[in-house]
Image 1 (cartoon, rainbow, N blue to C red):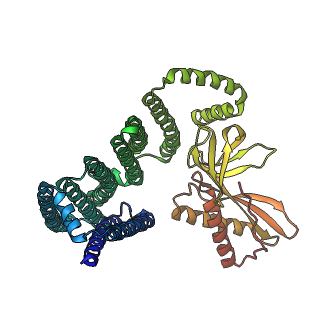
Image 2: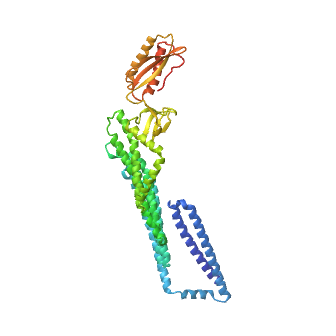
Image 3: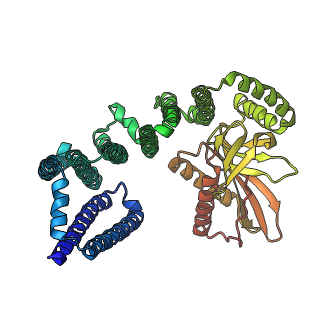
Length: 527
């Protein structure tokens, strides 16, 4: 009989251990299923192994103490059955009643939690299906599935934690345990919901993005959406950062010892909001400027070039203005008076200005280039100082400090406005496409002239870029075995290279057709 009593007590301790182990396993399984903490799965598994090890050690110690205590009682000659019954009788009867009611209430709470989870999962499944079918949404359904799966895991873990808290109350567990469980539940829900919101926002933004693209047309405001669509990733990052800051602030407020740090959260949120609004404001104003400048569809080439020249300058000015305003606003949020800083910056700017003469020279030259109309965006120019290598190509942008020129070979050349030097602009009113043709000495020049002029007449009829037919300027030079004829074709600004290449081919075909001997090469003078 004594041995049975000892086995019963040890078995009860082992049963308690197995129940606690099962409960911890369920809790950790819920955590691991939740993508909120899935990235820390290895750490959670390590924590679970450590807790199980501690429980096993505690169970072994208790079993050894039970066996030892009962062995000591047997050694003293005590009757274990009577001794155990006496201990049980000493426990007040109200304790057993309270324990029984608490166990019944706890079992009922767990059953209610399981039933509630069944209903929650069903309605979440219905909501998931309906969300995919709204407006026949073309957005990626995976983001919607991810959102509802995470929401299901969060609600499941929250309900079970709530059930455990109520069970601890029913079983009259010390109040401090319930308080810590409440704090744990609040922190978990704050973090889980806070990390779930970005997924919901992603799904909503993706849906709105798809709908905006579908319903955009040249007749409504959505026609501008495609040009502002690149701001969507920036919007998502800003919203995620704001949510993380809010979550961190709420979590910190739950811990009284560090709650005073939470006052910085709203300030950081305001700073992020100012940065985002500044970026959006800059893009919207820049878009409106382009819309106003190019609204007229009847602009000629010169007007278009002038407006293309103004766009980068306006963009740079707007960028500096908006970011300056954002910086001043951020300083006010941080309770820093910007006036002394701006005054110091002005004095420092004057001091730096004396040493930054090159920068000032570049800016001043940039203004003169614009106001005196030396060249515009789209012009073909050759620029540089005589003692240095000249740059040539099509002007892509004129900024306050530099000019960007695209060489015909494709290289982007960036030259400081102060180093522009002399400028040759091939895009003012007209330009000559100059092609030099070599013919033998024994050629009939009158016939050759007629062939070239005939080619020029044909070219003018077929090419709108040609302003006047090709004319033979005369004999340019006398070679050892050939004559070099110089031809001029008046063309539109910037079209000379294309017409020169076209003329070379046409001249070659025409001379071959007229059985005029062609030297080894056709010499050309490039502008």
